[in-house]
Image (tube, rainbow, N blue to C red; front, side):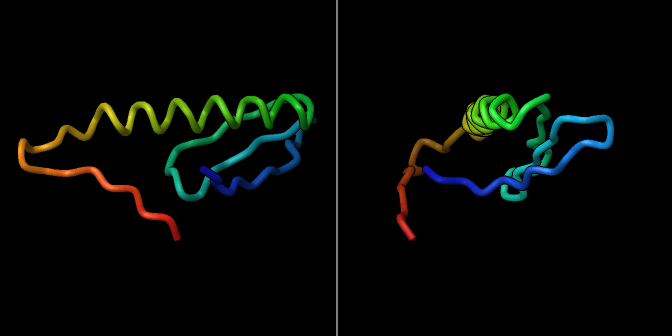
Length: 67
């Protein structure tokens, strides 16, 4: 899965990042390498919580769509 993120320079140094497709998914890091690693963790955590929060009805199906 590929998800776009926006990385901004932080006023106090380092970087902060946001994922527009995942509301509230933000992170920060002192270096580009750190913010990228933190982004991966933040995205994985966001998706994990989203999957837990959505329970399915007994007759519902999950499908994957590639676009």
